[in-house]
Image (cartoon, rainbow, N blue to C red):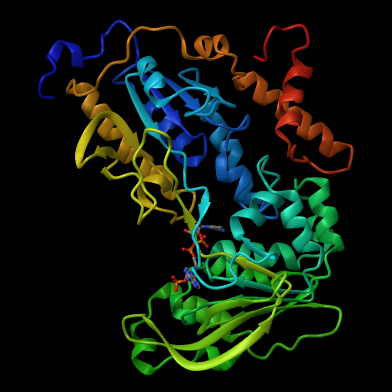
Length: 470
Ligand code: NAP
């Protein structure tokens, strides 16, 4: 780096390479795993999260009825148990510690804090009560401490006609969870108030809207098929929505062909009283949400899709009744104080995981996961992604391209000294045990603690007599 003597760029060999990973979701844990899983350079990784709990979207994003996928936590836990990795939860970069202060403690930082915001539709009526972002609904049913309970529960309580906008996997998750019977959700770890609110919701019709055709839908076949296994819901599809011209039929790939085969198998279904009608609609572009004090409907325009997959309005409009609209049109990354995020893509500008500031690689700063590449792919996609980033970091360390942090106090000691309450691995284990114990009182494997105060109380109860939670 120009202007900096080489000697100042090389970490000393007497101590391990210190790396802070910000965000203990799958991308962060896979980055920590890639760092701890190599023997060339001794490492000490601080895996920081603003929540007192690890696992990010595996805990607060994967739908609670996807028990097998949520069991991925056990695999991810192996990395938390690695002695080279230290979980440091309940610490927010920006408020508990600035990025600049953090960087004094470490040789490199990897940003893996994901994309927690929601993309906007940009249409009239979007802000009406009863119109929710999928991120709000998902946070609520997963028991995220920051979920807006009153907002979601007021909408769910009157949700007879539900319209879910978007045909990605999140849209299917929301549609499926809202259509499930209480019995189907009983074995999940959803907070009790969520189970109660869902059991009381008057859901009768759920319509999932694709603005383009079935060939452009981003849901995956397994998630699609699952809709037809719900005990109290019937999946409905209009055959006219599935018509493809011969060229499009010819050009479609395997995933699309599989999805179409599943959808075509449902065109003969008919709804029946007492069962939720779960309808998948395509070629229906939302143009505005209707209602005065709260949402009452969605106006859609029929579209056709050209050979490049672009939708064009046909001028045919229709109104779908709706008491609850869930906008499931993708996630969006936000800036961390002191870190640039590209306004358009919602990602941190980077080159193969090396953060760019003003178009130039910033020494010692890296990015992985959704905040690197955008909100796409399945959980496993982050493994490859994190490995690419860590390979760059280790290559930079070997070449002396990092800016080593000073040998200042230990990060956790310094956080405690400023009044923060970091939650470490043993503390997380106490939370984990408290959730399992709470679940057992209701005959369930686990019940998620959904309030920050309750999570921290579980830590404090486990360490009564200690000056601070360990
Ligand atoms: P997504 O797959 O990008 O889907 C977003 C949907 O919103 C698309 O159908 C998109 O349609 C639609 N959309 C965007 N803007 C719109 C607008 N203005 N009007 C109407 N529709 C609009 O995103 P996601 O569902 O949020 O999922 C995020 C990632 O998480 C994906 O990679 C997903 O596979 C993954 N995920 C996986 C699972 C699982 O494996 N079970 C579960 C949940 C999430 P266009 O294509 O026309 O833009």
